[in-house]
Amino acid sequence: EYTKLKYETEFSIRVSKYLDKLNRVEKFFNNSEVMPEKFVEQINLQRNRLIEVKNKYGSDVISLDKFIQ
Image (cartoon, rainbow, N blue to C red):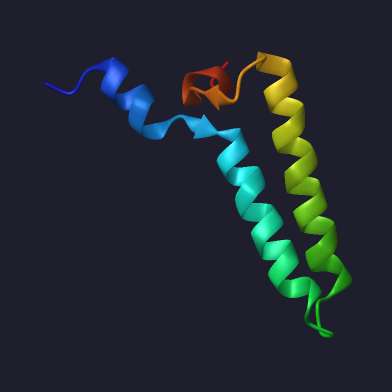
């Protein structure tokens, strides 16, 4: 049986993991001379949204149920 706990464990957003991934992507492309400004803007936008949701829910691991309201 696929329980709600299993679902939440598998599909919850782990903010720190996404922030780490964004940092790696940014670091990789910072060495490139062809990184478009729009790309930088999107990374910063995503980073800010992740930090905002982490602060809103007071947790690094956020169930997708929190976004359905």
